[in-house]
Length: 107
Image (cartoon, rainbow, N blue to C red; front, side, top):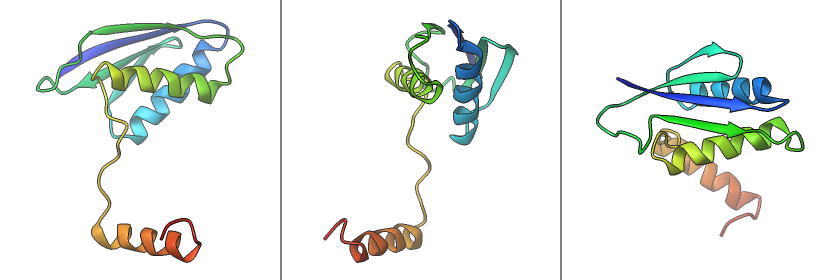
């Protein structure tokens, strides 16, 4: 495995690091958190990212979840992660589709 170094700075950087770390684990990625403002993301060497280190300056005006999602979007743009979760079983997809139809959200 290869590792990508992720670093954030700013007034609420530690909270954003925790948010991003939690979301990455939810998406199935392995991470470590060496400091309160950094993460190390374990990446598959077969699909290398364009860079091995990324840094963000977190705006004090951005809510933690908004800033965290911006970081995740940037990581996806660089090829480091995929925000798509694993495929649902066909039965689950059909149940969701039927529920959305019943509620009138889709035809």
